[in-house]
Image 1: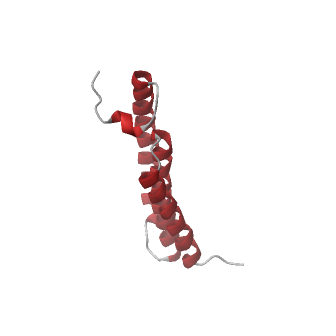
Image 2: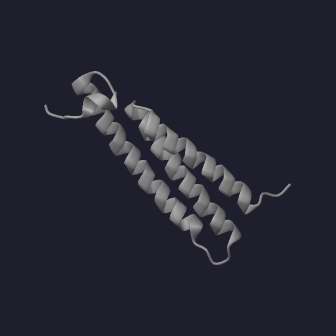
Length: 101
C-alpha cells in the first residue's frame, strides 16, 4: 500500500483543524501552545509531502528549519507560561489581560 500526496494533505488538514480549534476554544496557555505546535506540524507535514512528491523541491530543508524555529518558540513560550504561573498561580489566559507586576 503506497501513500499518495492526498493522504498527507488530508492528515495535515486534520492537524490544522484541530490546532485552530485548540486556539479558539481553549483558555489554558499550555493547551494553546500545544495547538500552535499542531499547526506548525501540519505545515511541516505539507512541506515534507510536497518535497517527496514534487521534483526539485526543497521541502525537507524548509521543514528542518521550521522544526528548529518551533523548538525555540516552545522554549520561549514555556518560559513565559512559567513566569505567568509564578505571578498569578494560574495559566488561564483570561487573567493575563494585564501583565503588570
